[in-house]
Length: 178
Image (tube, rainbow, N blue to C red):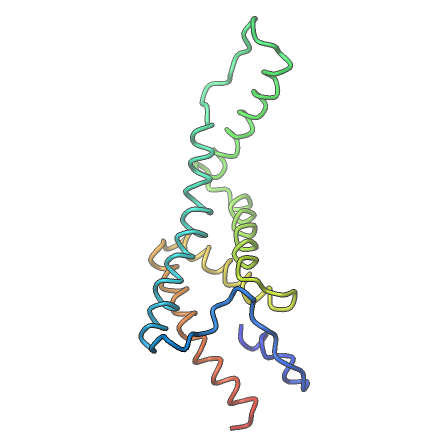
């Protein structure tokens, strides 16, 4: 990802800027504090919010509580113009629930992962050029979460955040010719 970040520098341009909501360091934190914040606390909260809550738990709750196994029957005293859209909605939710949580439909899950990863990138405040620096890891962390679980995505995200400063220093020294 850092090669993309520094690609403009190869043509004597400024490297891409990071997102405006991105943590860039703090004078009062020690190295251990930076590692704790960047490698453990930050990734935990982002993985909990974006992977656990937004990708799996909230969609499951929303679909599960509207999931009705038996089709609804319209009653004689209910206005049919109101009940038909409701029946359509329940049947649509029933199908989505079944395809996602029973059949594990890869197309629906991938679409949802892309949508949540877009939101993950947007929250980091990137500009148009640095957007892939947040969007692509969001997709990667999401699929790691879905395949291996929360702990694996948390470790992956924490490692990426912790090593980003080291990789950044290597690229800067390489570009400066040191």
